[in-house]
Length: 138
Image (cartoon, rainbow, N blue to C red; front, top):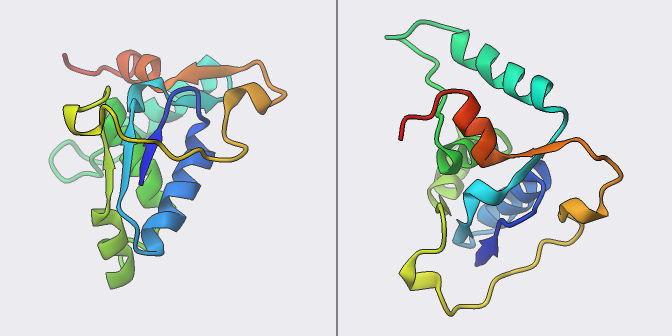
């Protein structure tokens, strides 16, 4: 199953992908940098910075900064990843920045109700911008 993440809400996309992975489907999410996170820019970036400041630099918890890794971490939060079925499901989820050559001409799956246009809020930020503001290394 291939899901195009362009203009999709991150939480709704993550819950859909987690459910499909638990059912046993392989989930590939393309255009992970174009996924939207709802909320004001200040609040979203502030939460991510709090997560990074938590813990110890050598012992963790280690929070990713790249867009595809951030999205995969959100999906992991919606899986029982400490149990065997959650570990198996998490291995079935892959996130890609851009569109890899192997997925160029393949059809994508539509996630119902996850498009940012259907929300009533005007406060949202792209995952690429969040990643840049929390210190992504190029």
